[in-house]
Image (cartoon, rainbow over all chains, first blue to last red):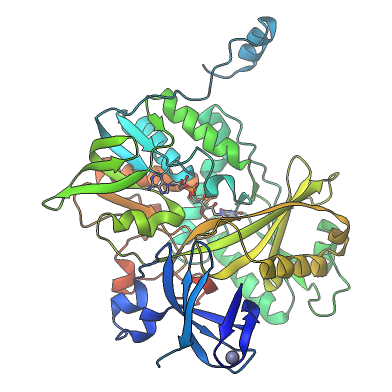
Length: 77
Length: 416
Ligand SMILES: Cc1cc2nc3c(=O)[nH]c(=O)nc-3n(C[C@H](O)[C@H](O)[C@H](O)COP(=O)(O)OP(=O)(O)OC[C@H]3O[C@@H](n4cnc5c(N)ncnc54)[C@H](O)[C@@H]3O)c2cc1C
Ligand SMILES: [Zn+2]
């Protein structure tokens, strides 16, 4: 799988570290946002950090059944 | 038909024409007392114990694919009782005891082979941690012993004792742990449940759950509507989708775990080896194939295949611990979708909907759990309460803070 970092270009997914559902970070730290997940089979917005590159946090929309990357932007922007 | 030596002789003398399929292939009835969604190990075991122990026979197991097509037929079959957390240790200890009598119980050879499990230690700190774990296992009443470096060398001489990065300092050995034949477990439970009157319906996908006034009515399936007094979810990696049909959101993420098998070799690996620091474990199947695996790929996935980077990582870790492994040719690799819970421990509980039950969150360790999970879930469905050994597996524990976090990694399933 490749992830196209807006700063560094298309890179192997091994350069990135995965956090999970982007909704978590947007939540208020309550029970539901920490522990419950939609866990869809299909499009999923998730947070990846380019740890072996520019270290930016990215919000990647990815299909969890096919691993097709649908969109990528810098997280929180 | 009961299997026995006499039956083999009888069939042998009559041209082996009398063997029957392991289970019937009935059509769905309009209604059942209990409908179980998912014909994996947990669903089939639940059906068996409901019929055998609780005398409920009007049961259907609905499987969207075929029996053995899910994780029950994709796992690396390691059975052990070496958990440290309260709640887990009693449960897996009980399950190991059930494994010991399982072939006789089911009248089907599940090839349970207590060939031992060795967990390697590479530093003083890790030795201390494993000594503590060994004490917890012993306190639970299970067999365990600690080996020093010479002891490990005598037990498993093919390990890489020259490794500079991960020198072997010792190991935790559980001689009563081992492996079983995964397909035989699925087929054995399916056959035994069928003999007690359970309908096993394959190619029957549940597409909706009917609820009225907070009470379960039945299910919509690819083979029509089926009414049910009680409905038991048991679908492993698809837990979020099926519970979602009842409007529930779960503390579960689905992740892919890969496994690998080499060509058949002469007896080489005598036990199960866990090289935890390198994320690698291995055993040898009775057919001779070396069966091994590593960690999750690390991100949410419903693809039953994994990434090449994990293949590379597992191969590197394997080579570093067992250098001779490099000479074996890899036959196959595959993946299964794990129902990863937020604390790494499973859930067996009622839900807020009357008549609806949930079993899932087995992560990468649910094969060894099958006998204990099936009997606990059956008890819950039949009587309304869980046996003591499974009482900690409540759905409410995430909200109440009674987590069972064996790895101590927090609510990040990809790290368990
Ligand atoms: C590579 C790998 C290695 C593993 N190694 C080990 C190990 O060494 N030791 C160990 O203890 N555990 C191991 N596990 C974990 C273990 O296999 C699982 O935890 C366990 O099998 C899950 O329970 P199950 O058998 O009921 O699941 P499954 O066999 O996956 O059963 C669930 C069934 O539900 C069906 N289903 C899903 N949705 C629907 C629907 N809508 N309608 C009808 N049916 C549906 C599926 O088709 C499936 O057959 C491993 C898993 C994998 C993938
Ligand atoms: Zn970058």
